[in-house]
Length: 275
Image (cartoon, rainbow, N blue to C red; front, side, top):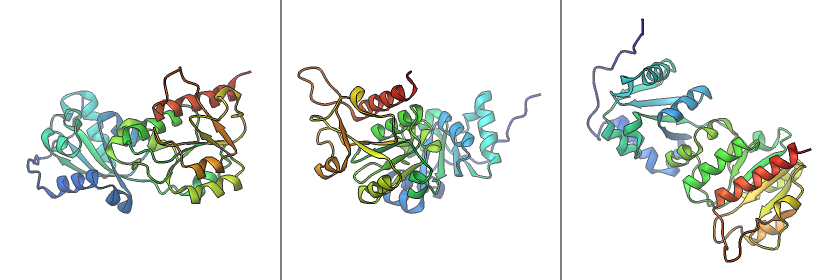
């Protein structure tokens, strides 16, 4: 006999409800998310990933329709068992927190792990990814997703970049942020630690670099990528031990930064696994 999680007696319908206002505030304010060490994640897949990775969940906002199927019923029960505050809200209120959350029926306020720079570089890492000035949260999240999938052991999100724990970045990462050690820091703090840890800094450039297949990516490296268009600042390029460029067809002068990251990560993985 199938057991169903009991529904809450009340469904919140007002956008002025304190829990709804709090979630909306956090989604809109990156400084608050960083200060309070929280994030907003929405969607069934991300909720399941958060549960699997044991990410601390502070609040679960659930649509009354979530339990209309078996998966939703199991998800609601699992969220309730974490001890999180569970609040039933209308799909329209979920969409007001993060567009698209209403259809999925779930949005979470999660607490960030306390990963430090020491955790990132102090564990004999052999492949890290550094993102500098990646302002688009979708690109940043996609980069973290590829990093997790292609063997990176951690990532540093440097100055000028989006918040990796925003709802858009978490959605694009599809759970990678919950499992990959990720820190927000500055180049001035990270680069000396890389040298101490024995990682070579490889900067992605648009010209005057070697192609990925002719760059040594087998030894411990940190791949450094910058924003599309302007790329990396000159001082960061100068600080790198190697510079790598991705060859493109004549007339093409730029590549989506996530695509560039995926290419470099794939080539690193290929070199390390190829005979």
